[in-house]
Image (cartoon, helix red, strand yellow):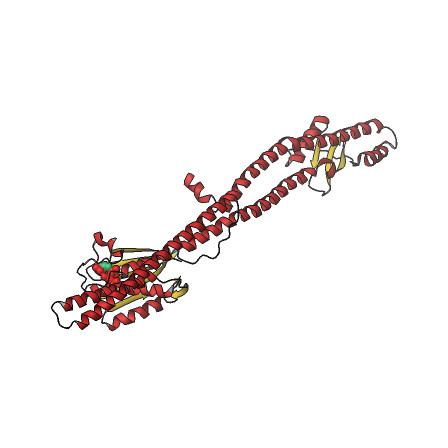
Length: 438
Ligand SMILES: Nc1ncnc2c1ncn2[C@@H]1O[C@H](COP(=O)(O)OP(=O)(O)OP(=O)(O)O)[C@@H](O)[C@H]1O
Ligand SMILES: [Mg+2]
């Protein structure tokens, strides 16, 4: 029951706040209308019917009184039409059925009740034949007296006016509330969008503080947080670039000096180490620089991955690609290229066959890179994302590089608000699963 209620309830803030305003309003109207119809309307209708019934009764009494006089009936007829607004006719020799009548609606029921209370002769009402009048047939001696009563006399139109006002005013109230609430919700939605964009690594345009105090406060906190994070990122990048750059100069000097020292014992090992350090620094510099502020574009995954795969195919690896054509995702193209290249490069180092598959998922894109190599042990899966971490520690260039590939791939994925995971591949090796929001 509660879960059903939760499903039906509006999810958006605008929907919820409108519901909070509208529910009491509707309840109030139902209660007010209930009370009004129960007592007021019944009472008014009965009193009007009672008035008409009184008139009918006095006409009958007058007719009885003047029936002996010659022009008596015409006099009463004129009097009824002129003073009471009722048209009477006599239908000689006709009888009114004595069977009791039940009304179909409030007006009929009240009129029957009132006539019943006042008259002692059989009567019949006809509410349908005429549009503007109600016909009342009353047994009068051996004839039927037909009285035409204007409908207006039995019906208070203010009832409908009241209901119309009630519904109309609540509609106006609803529209006004919606306009106001929309304006209140807009800054919250803008804040949510800005936070979402920032989380996905997109640049957030100038964020203007607006709305209620609490929303402004949240907005100001977001701006402060964003600025702090951006400052930290740029500080980190500056520092890493600086350190790497500064180390390169003495390293280059060392390499040159080693070359000039000729064929001394152990010099090749030293040269290898210096080369390794240079490679590491290059990797570090590239990593620290990141992709900068590369603009996002709609990237066709099939085209981009096929392009990357070409260079690996030339090295004799088999890469199978399973991506729908015209499957586009909005992302930074070069960063994406670098991340996927790193992952395929890893797989190609350990496996013969590589499988790249991408598909649309609700709210995102999923990219899978499978291989049939030895896989990555569960205990190592979190560690391989660390910069400079390699499972095989020997730093042998044959089994790995600097140890930055996975870190770069993760940086890219997280920068786009996505997720990257290492799983067991059904192909036997490792499976890298990337989920990117769209
Ligand atoms: N597909 C894979 N199969 C088995 N092991 C893998 C696979 N991908 C990565 N690894 C392991 O994870 C470690 C970290 O990978 P990462 O790409 O970060 O560094 P790297 O490949 O050694 O160096 P770089 O990519 O910087 O040249 C690798 O050294 C390797 O041991
Ligand atoms: Mg790698």
